[in-house]
Image (cartoon, rainbow, N blue to C red):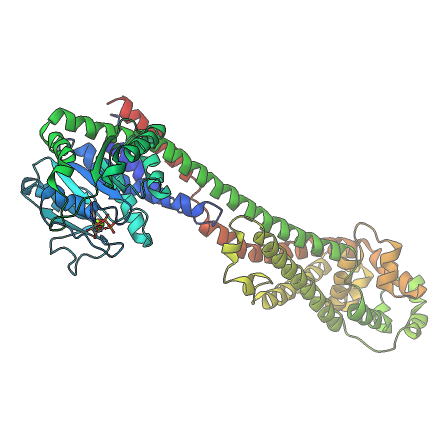
Length: 570
Ligand SMILES: Nc1nc2c(ncn2[C@@H]2O[C@H](COP(=O)(O)OP(=O)(O)OP(=O)(O)O)[C@@H](O)[C@H]2O)c(=O)[nH]1
Ligand SMILES: [Mg+2]
């Protein structure tokens, strides 16, 4: 048995929730537009589609929109022959929308059925509660039941909030009444909105206001041509001549045709329904394209997140490789470490367990070296701090490389913003973490030596150097022997004397040393990998926090399909 298909409103609500979940957290090009579009879709569903679908018989809402100063408020007052909204000489005048309806329709607009996020106010025009986020509700006898007029803020305002609100109000309209003037009818912004109306199949009427009587036909024809070319030939065009106002109102005869048409809409159920259904169907149809656009933007977010992660992954993989190479290439056995090692092997006691052939060289080696006595602990300490330095350098350069490549990637710079100081080098606690990790590693090597010493390899002569001495040898061997010692490495590690080389060859030739060194090397690699991974996580976590939900696209697509199915099975 299949579950009952969801109703159109239910499917729409799901789609709305999926769109609302989109975060567009990565600042890729076009992000702001996508975020605005997502908000607009959510708003249109809340403000218009759901209320309209749930009540097809609710009063028709005609939103009066257009440029500032076009005379929208004047037109609304004139249609009602009353001062319901404030017209003015200061631009922009109307900031909070004014919704006028018949007293009988008051309940249809007083609650949160339509435009639920705008708080209703009822005070005088321009009163203290006419702020943003408010909608002034006026019930007036001059309007018949079934038709409400909304005086909107200007669409091309210098006030951004006005513009956004105007677009939101237009998206909530059953009918757009576009008011423009003889002077401004070719302005770009209103035309952008008219093109949107065409895309969305919204019912539109156009009022050409303030037309000098002598230019009436010429201007009206020109605008009619523009409307036709824009695909708006079905839109009714009303021309209002520029005349002196009477008490702030337009002469009644100038607006008589518009008034008659609107009253006709209110009175004629069939005509009214046609307008409502046209806009509703158009808005629902256009949702699919709008969601496709949002899916593309979401896909872009995923791609950007992937690329940023890959850049961090690559930088830290390279850091691991650098550590491996340094370990394998004997690069650590230089300078301080080499000096300590040579001093250490130069002490006679160290060689007591060596093969006789090497042992015979003991005295000569002793004289070849500095003669200074160095303890195995000193060798370990010097080696340990070299390893910590190596890790630090690798972590520093990986961070720097990641930050550098992020700066050239979409969304990367914004993720770094305000964190550059932290992210262009290893994290502040990395030095301590590296020292701890190296100390643990050395402890592990000594433990390895100790436990091996208890086994059958106990007879190995090098173990007679004591756990610390043998440990130091194994640690040095980690950096000197990789799959067989090359002559060059021996030369480096053994110092310049032939004796030193022979000695090292003898020690590193010992199978037990080599096997322990191999295990110790693997352990060190693993520890370095973990440390660097924690470092990489700083970048990875930033991407993850800003990246879209992994299943967002699938869920959004499923919701869009769900709406299409629900509409088909209606
Ligand atoms: N003479 C004359 N003045 C008009 C006409 N229409 C509007 N005005 C004046 O133009 C100014 C602007 O009119 P409003 O009705 O406030 O314009 P609006 O489109 O509501 O402007 P905003 O609220 O800023 O978007 C006011 O001072 C009106 O009195 C007209 O047809 N003739
Ligand atoms: Mg106004």
